Image (cartoon, rainbow, N blue to C red; front, side, top):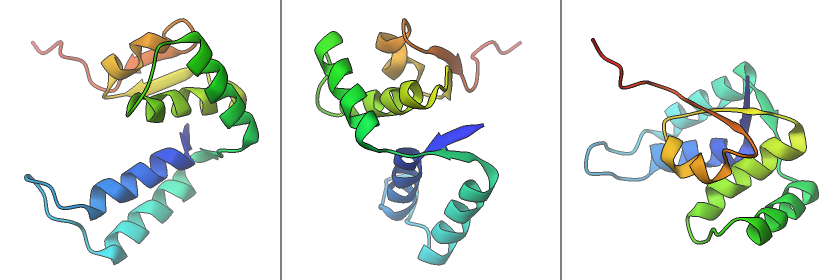
Length: 111
């Protein structure tokens, strides 16, 4: 399984910012968890090809603001040849469903 550098940055940002439901994690914990992710998953890097693909996506699909982060993940997938996205945020990626396969991380099909 793959994750991108962007996902690692978002993980670090989430764990270190105060939120109404959670306090920031100690830096030592954040570093340990981030290193675990790096050792567990293949890492897709951001590079000039990803930026070029992101700009192509901007030309093809109406996106802006915070949606750019999602589009950058898709651009990383497309340039790295990763066809499938496993996510909690299915609705954020549906605009890209003609380009990638989107799989919900959890389903709402409870008995």
